[in-house]
Each structure stands twice: as structure tokens, then as C-alpha cells.
Length: 189
Image 1 (cartoon, rainbow, N blue to C red):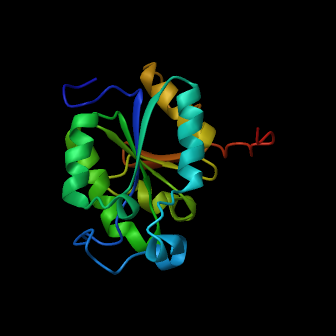
Image 2 (tube, rainbow, N blue to C red; image 1 turned 90 degrees about the vertical axis):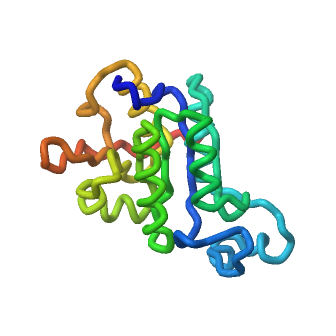
Image 3 (tube, rainbow, N blue to C red; image 1 turned 120 degrees about the vertical axis):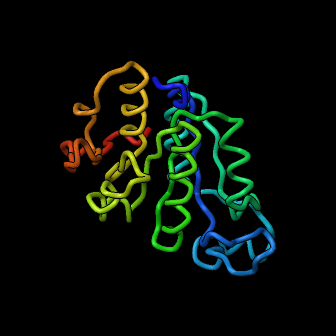
């Protein structure tokens, strides 16, 4: 572990704002598409996909935090202030078409703080090889990420390689590596 790397057993999930200049005062948001109640009632609604993955990590003794920037009113500057003190080993970014520019900025900030950025989500799955070539993204998890993320965190925390972690795409020696697809989760309990 280099001096800038963080302990791997701390994971920060981030759903970035829609664009780099977004502030909590902006009326433009993804809320009408994904979180209509946020616009109408002010209710806080979070992604069950990331919350499910966070629950799997917590059950395995891994410390997790979750930031949904728009719902929680956190802009990119505020996110920098959170990433530093939390000291995550991984920053898991829900990369979607609407937030791709900010997802990349969040990943760059994660790298600068010593964390390993990981992209997840349907778009990351569909564009995994393109994302792997981005300088800011270290790992892309294809498909369901609950268990794959846990396996990645555990492997890297133990100093092991990632070649046995199914469902990953990453760049190694300028070559895109795709491990075999992870099996679907049969027992949802």
C-alpha cells in the first residue's frame, strides 16, 4: 500500500450530481426521473441497488457510507470534504448517462485522496471496456454488484489479485481485462 492509499475495508458509495456546476439550490435535477418525491415532498429517497450492496459489505464487517449528492444537498466541493475525512479505500460511483461527467470527477477525486474508484450500474456494465480505458476509473463491476464488490474489497484487502473476482473489467498493462461474468444471485435472501 502506498502512502496515499487508504485502508481498503472502508467503502464510500456516491451517486454524483447531474453536472459539475450543480449546487443544492439548483432546480435542475434527476429528481423528476428517479426521485419524483424529492421535488414534491422533500422526502429523501436512495438507490436500493447501492443500499443492497452496502448491506452485504456491512454484514462482512466492512465500514460503509452512502452519499446521494442531490438528495443530501452535497455538491462536488462538499463531496471532496467528505471523501477526505472518511478515508475510504474504495469510492463506488453509480455512473449513469446523466452524471457521467461528474462521475469521472468523483473518480479523479477518489484517486487523489488515495482511494480506488469503482464504477457500477447498467451504463457501466454496457460500456465497461470504454470505462476501463478512462484514466480515473480503476474497476468496473458488470451486472449485479452486491457480491462482486464484496469479493473485490476482500481480495484487495488481503493483498490478492483480482483475476479470480468474477464480473470485473479493468485495465492492466494497457490491456482491458474482463474476468468471467459473475453468476446471478439465486437466493435473494
